[in-house]
Length: 297
Image (cartoon, rainbow, N blue to C red):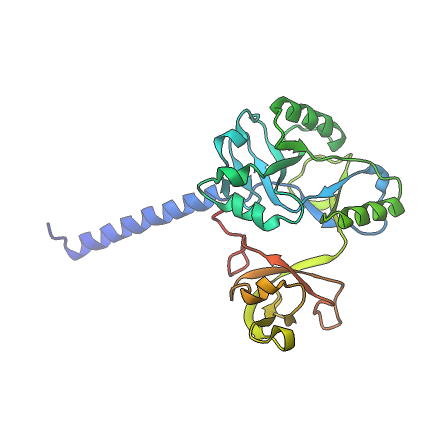
């Protein structure tokens, strides 16, 4: 059957309507999860109202009572045994593969078809009970009870403790760093669970870190002749700099791809806004070329 011009135009319009509807539905399904976000620790904080824990270098994960999600709202697909007998109440935590294994944790969580062997090395480190309703001082014992009910070794409550002084806090930070940890988290005991960024949750690290996009591979000299000597990278604000330290020989032989994102550590900023003593940390496989977290975990 042949369609006249008006009929053809109507069919096209209907098709586009359905297509937009499907895209909107998909975007709605990927809506960011309403989680608490941390500010950076700063002097003057009253430590008497804070619980302190290790900051785990993994993937922020939110159990909504039926499904695991990333902070960006993407579904995570673990093996059925990993989430068997989990409660029908929300849990907020970190999928963690151990200190120094951030890339492994990201790779495992992003895989649509779960790798059973890889998931055996994962732990869900739970630090909050979002829907409980009380203050953190009250949520913490309730969370411990929930996790005891789950009763498996790969689901653990993040250990929280009080720290009496800022000097003791610095000592704890150094101890965690020497053990290969990333830093500390401070959680205000009197706070309610709010899906916003404020001082109820604070992060504290030995080094500042940030992300930059790889623009080019710069050739090496001397010992690094014939392979990558440095990366030319671009910060989100458009500033560019050479990132040349922190790489293993294997990473220089096979450097991060152009347009990929990398994390680097640094110690403050120059007056120009460029980082001081920048050093490569890892490739950010969870970021797309535009810097947005991938929708395909």
